[in-house]
Length: 278
Image (cartoon, rainbow, N blue to C red; front, side, top):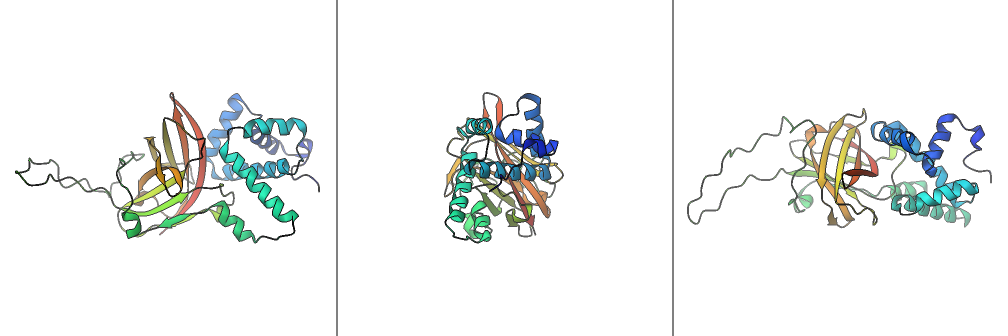
C-alpha cells in the first residue's frame, strides 16, 4: 500500500510545515505561530487535525522514515491525547485488516461521545464552584441580584443569599477530537436566561496547579476566558468545568481550549469544537 503521506518533495510547502509540526520538528517562533493560529483559526485547526490523523495512520502502518518515526516517538512520550489517537488508528487498522467493515457512523460516535442534557437532571449537579469571569464583562441580560445588601437576620431567621445562576444545559467533551466540522458535537440550548455548562475531560497526565478555559467563536472572538480553574471529578473522570451565559452563544460553531497552568506558564492541552443551536 502506498503511504498516506507522500514524499516531502511532492507536498505543498504548507503541508510540509504541518507535517513537521505534527512530528514535533518545529521549535521556537515557528512552533508558537502554529499554536497561536490553532486557537484563532477553525479551518486551520481542522487542517492540522487531518494531517495528524494521517501521520498516526502512517506511524501505525510503519510508513514513516526512521528519522520521522524517532521524532514522533519523542512527541508521543507523555502525550496522552496523541497516544489515544495512535491507539484509535491501530484499532481502525486492525478492524480493516481482519475484514470487519465497521460502519463509519460508529467511528464518528467513538471519536466524540457527547453527553448533552438540558433540564432537571442537570439541576442536581454540584454548583459549588465559583462562576468564572466572562470575557467582556457580565452579560447585559443577566440582572444583578435584587438583594444589594444582606440585613442582619433576627435570631432564628436564616441569612438570605443570592441564588446561583441556573444551568439550563450541559455539554461534556472527551475522547479523540473530531476533525470534521460537520460531525462536531451539537448542544441545543433552551430559550430563556441561564448558563451553559461546558465540561472538558482531562487526560491522566494532564496534572497542573490550575487550568484555564477559553471559548472562541468561529471568527476568533473571545466569548469566555475562565482562569485558575480547579479540576472536578465526574462520570467522565477528572474534568475542567466552566459556565458561560447562554445568551452569549447565538447559533453557530465554537471551540473551547483548555490550558494547564504551572509556574506562570500555560500549556495548551486540548481544543474541542462544538456547535450551538436554539
